[in-house]
Length: 374
Image (cartoon, rainbow, N blue to C red; front, side, top):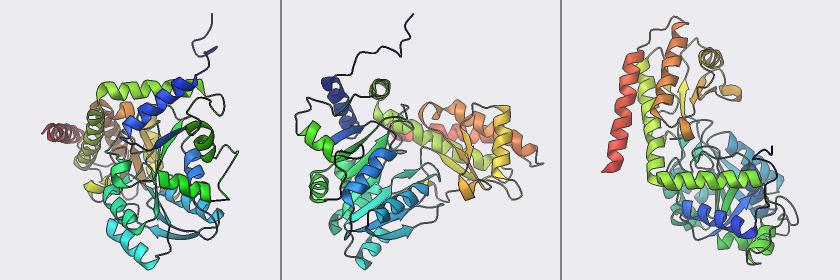
């Protein structure tokens, strides 16, 4: 008996292009869209290595670990890098970006993460885009964690390079990603002798051999399973409705934040202001005297299916992350996460109010959903 994952017919160029068009529709973009055969770090690195070179200058905004990675790549390309580091409990503002650009008028490339799932914050890209566009720099946005979870309008916001991945709010596979590329980004890539060419990192190869060739011949054999899974998750989003999907994620974030505050036991939101809290994941600060990694381990021992994880690296002792994205952007996932965290906190002798947390989460969910309908 043949397994349904095996012996698949090759994905045709026309089928590939049709999936590409659906990604463009998801982003409401008229720019070229390139689907890349790998996790989103592939197009992110490709964008940086195509857009940065010796003699260029970049403003790299660091609101979480991915911003740190981008800075390393930019320096490796020979660019002069100005890191704008923002505490992980908040977001960068357009005013901070504007001041940095005023101090460094030579900056011609800006890199920013829209939503940082790892730290639970999200940045006001629409306002930032206005500032970057007025300055004239190329604007690269990592929207892997935000696509499907909150509004994302690269064309309207002046984003030249918008990278997405399907594995979070889109509810799709991790092994395929995409980037929308503006005309001036293509021009900059073509003018950069150091931009990857004849390379798996090369976006120019896709431009010259796929887009300019009329999308008739693919560069290599597509990863069929990932492409079919991407198509399936796009169909699912279209069926649910993008507005409904983003509302569901906003409601999950509001419910988790409200429920955690009502739960007590010393849990507090890691991101101080709700307006800067990402709808894809809520980060919480562990109570004093409680190790976040141990607390999460106790919760997962009770229910391994919960979307809970401790913070990474230095944050592992203090940060708890509730990943309410995709199928976990649902009332049951939020309520189960809060209830199990409450039970784990009781093992530390903390007083918690699980029923109060459940009521607060349910009310926040209703309020957010109702507001979206008005």
